[in-house]
Image (cartoon, rainbow, N blue to C red; front, side):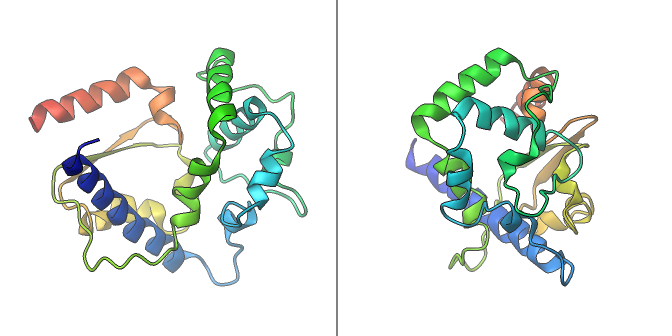
Length: 202
């Protein structure tokens, strides 16, 4: 990866970090459970212990079953993420057994550390950047059924244009029936959106 692209990606991450994590913290109602902390995603070692009870393929399966829904999955008391999925629950129709096997084999080699670190464990870290902005044209593709819209304040923040404080040249596309994994659910549509965006800004 060349230095110019690395710099752009770093700034994009900083802008996202500042905008999303700040909004999530500001809008979390007083007294509510910190939903991501409840999953143990921010607590080093907890998710690793939870995931470690299963092979990587099963972990991938459970993640896709849980987070392809339109509602935030909430674990009961004394339950971890992996306890929330019944083994008989079918995969989302667009995620095949072959997909799951491929992902499982890759995560078996790499582990889940990067997926846990970014964004969950870095979301509330202080970044000493005065004014992180992405000034170049950018596009955000989101599924209309993405569960993240259920986090307090996020849907308003995304739809009312406040996010453009950090990414002023942002074009946002909402895909009907799309979930958190919209790029895998509707790959042809997402690819066409990307190609059109790149063509328009070439």
